[in-house]
Image (cartoon, each protein chain N blue to C red):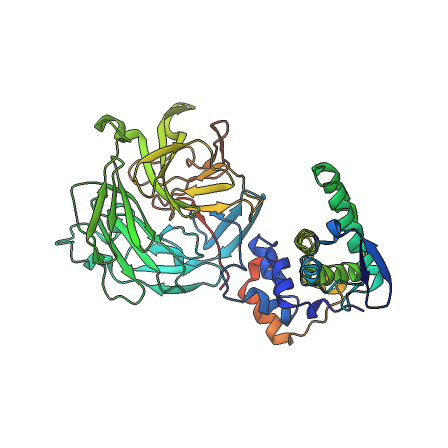
Length: 366
Length: 145
């Protein structure tokens, strides 16, 4: 009689690694104690769960829906603590949340643990705040990203705020935010890479900052030629396979039924050459899929996650809903790089909470 | 040709070029431990025969992706006890492809089962106390619906 509970831990780990949907992974740990020890290991390489789409807040409900469009499965989590809060996703299992009371937190939706962040509204580069706490949540803060697991010593939280004009960083345990050296540009995205911060402005220029906030270098680009083009382009920075890439997202007004809606119609990707700092367009992502939008932009290797569509960009809405009311659905879907076609995700009602939009997020159990 | 001896005394002959799919055997040959035959005290005859079937097929049909896929699918249609032995053997003999295939097979079986069904099919004793189990299910109720 064989004893499956006595299988060596590394082999149980190999089996658990194939359970990439969060529910299967948790159930694996409920079978017996030795199996449970495997999923509770803090070794990041063991847990490789699939990214999930967290849907927007529903009226009158404390349940948030998480769906895995890659496998058509979904589940609901009881999360009253994020009702009324605006959230951003990450690839490290935690959401960044901000409520209508200036309070900012990290939340792991699977464990419901929360970590309080220092008050951004008291950051030294904000002189007099003239907006209400709701306005602060709805649009004064533009994007806040968690760059790595809170368990890691290099965990940094980055915030873009004040009409995209200001940035600040915080490490866990900090009592206040450290502002980044300001300039006259509008910041669209920021990532932590190689011990430094890379930010991209609305014209495609990339600024590199040190961890103490001073600007080390500016890499000029000619991605966007004129001010006219700004309306229809969004830019993101992503670390794909250890190299910084720029993702350019084209949005335009499309007539849906009788109402014009802003929808994404194209993506372009550029690799930032490490030495020459030139941007080179690439037309194939190889074994990667990337997730951009209302989250810390991240890439997933499809050789480790065959359920993800390789050479594809999964995107959500991170530009509308705040200023313009959305009437016919969010701009969420998959861009297939190979044939430049878009598969939209549909069937979701727009939340009456305008600050709440769908986001991509990769769960982590511990 | 290489001679392999299983734990229960069975002898198998296999070409060296095929046998080196096992990193363990490969290192033994390189370290000159394979003069007469290679003893494999951790693998019984029945399991070793199955493993050899796998590596022989993967050596001869190396470029036939479709053929190997259907071979692999049939290969893992065995009972739980045999699957267990093959996983341990693939690990001991360090045959990555076979280890990945068998672990994926177990994972695919588990995916569709409830916790109780997994325990029944894999013959695993529930060693949680009722309180521990209740807490587990309560903490992550969403996973057990």
